[in-house]
Length: 575
Image 1: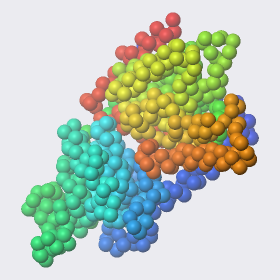
Image 2 (image 1 turned 90 degrees about the horizontal axis):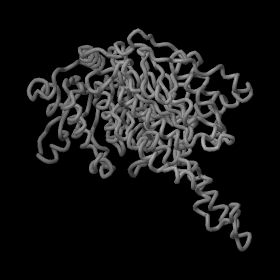
Image 3 (image 1 turned 180 degrees about the horizontal axis):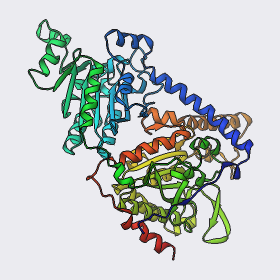
Image 4 (image 1 turned 90 degrees about the vertical axis):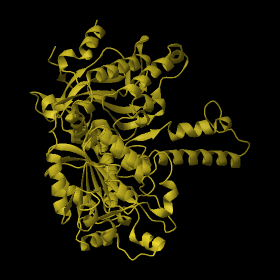
């Protein structure tokens, strides 16, 4: 029983796809990826070369240069919240706030995954814009949920005051950042701060609760800057003399040590992280070394049809995410519309739940088949049991969503689908094991909720360039909005041609607006998803998240495989 019975899954892509289809899918995905790359590059540029030059002229590094120096050589920075505020304009001058003026990322430092929060000093001196506080708080939440060290690279001139009404008050206003600082401290999560520049008001408060605070020679932390004090008290001062390292390292003790420059400060932060306990991931791997999938993860770009109505083989997706393409499927004979089971990612066990696509057998009518991508009674019950077992066993759980919603109709209501759905929602609402959600293509209606969508607090939710997040598709919603003007075949009923055109134009406008709103970058702009990731990069991203969930010990139950509840359920379901 100690040996989890992992079996091969998947096959070469050309066994289920023609070369023409694979190439067509890959080309369509490449076009989406190019848009993603261009927009990401735009965000990473901040306010442009002029502002980068200004930072360098002060003898400082840009924020992303600091993050690059901080990471372990050769490791990948897994940024999230990249597209927050993308395309929006603020203030009378119509200013943009790329990434909400702050970089948040999972970064490997001295062999340990850390959450990094870094003000972008090329965007209004690292000011906080609308959604900046929510983005920072989301990063702090990830650190708290996984007990990962949190590193603050602080270079923040406080709120962007023309938009203060959208950042100062409210439950997730800027002040909630400091509550999150306190909750992290209370939970024993290490926090280390480097102060690199202008840290005014909230920017000055953010590092203070950290366990260790370093300041560069050009940095200062103040409740109010010199300009405000001069106006209020008619005193001739500089912000440096009020709150520079001379004051906070040697007088107030609000900082622990000083560093001559950015590079040195980052080395000191790395040294602090090296003093922490090392990652427990190797312990939980035991003798299982990480291994690549048998089938190349980059092939996912050719496996996913760009049209969400066209099916694909979900097992082929799982095969390109798990180590050696080995998987233990749970309850394979029940609820065939759902794939769930256990595999390794980076040598570490995780549970995976995915929606099958296409047609599957109907257990109530053996001679019939029904569409997948929908939650039916047996599949919901199976997934709920699997989710509970993963929570009981301490196995991180990955949800691969491509769901159109719940089954509907007379039979569904008679079978008590509301109750079964509520059981799954209750389970995912109360789970303590880390859960990660990936919206592959469709994430629709209550199915999005039931499969651990963002409202159900996964540690992180990822979208892909194909993702369509909505209650329903634009065409369906347009039909619903104009239902009284349509006949039973959904044809427009009108008195004359002018009225017909008006209804058709209205329906078309509704459909186009909903389709625009379903753009994954629109969701990411509003923080309705944490990050948009190309499908070819999902394996790498999930590897980091799964490993991060095993890094710290003592804060959650992690059973050894001999005593997994999953073994018992597997035996019972097979009889």
